[in-house]
Length: 274
Image 1 (tube, rainbow, N blue to C red):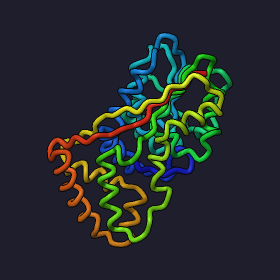
Image 2 (image 1 turned 180 degrees about the vertical axis):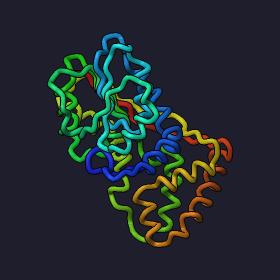
Image 3 (image 1 turned 180 degrees about the horizontal axis):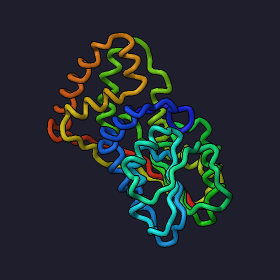
Image 4 (image 1 turned 120 degrees about the horizontal axis):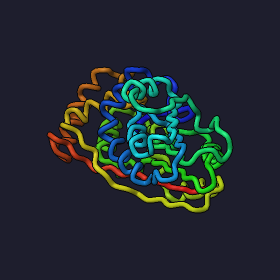
C-alpha cells in the first residue's frame, strides 16, 4: 500500500523488492480484493481483457481463471521486475505480458472488452489522461473496473505502521507518502470518470480483512516493504528499524491478534461502462 510512482509505480523496483511485495503484501492486502474484482466480471461476452498495473500477478491469475479459455488476457505493468515475478508464478497460464504505461495504451480504439486496474491509478501522474485512454480502448458497452485504497485510517495495519514510523521523523510527511490513499473520495473518482466520457458508473467502498499468520510476520512485511518512509528512517539511524518492528509487532498483536493477525481494511471499487 505504500509504493511511490512516476507513472503507475516506481520504475526502480528491484527483483528482491518485487518478491517481498508479493510474499507479504500479496496475501495481506491484495488477495481479498482480487477475489472481489473477479466477482464483478461477467465472462459471457468477454473476448479481450487488459489488466493495467498487474504487479506480481495476484489479480491476473484470478482473471485468467474467470474468463473463458478462448479469451485473451493482456497483463501489463510499468515495472519489468514486477512482471518478471508474475511471469515466474504464472508461466503455465495463457497470458500475454506487456510493459505498458496507463497514460499511453498501445491499443486501437474500441478494441478491449474489460480494463482492470487494481491499486494502480493512485500513482498515475495524469489521471484524466489515463481514464481517457481506458475509455478510448474500450468497446461500446465495455467496462473499466478498478480499485483504490480507502483512507489510511480505514486500513488498520498500515495506519498503525505509519503512526509508529512518524514518531521517528522530525518533520511533516511529504505528499508523496500519501499517494497510496490519495483516491479514496468517491466524488472525485466519479468526476474523473465522467470527464473521460463514462456515464454509467458505480462506486462502492468494500471492507475486508488483512490476514497474516502472525503479528510478527506482518510487522516484518510492513517495515521491510515500507518504501521511502522507512528508507528515510534508515538514513537517520538504521538501528531504529528493529526497534520499530518490535513496537509494531506488539501493537498489532494487542489490537488484532498475535497469531493469526486479522486487521480491517477498506478499498474503493469502481466500475464504469462505455
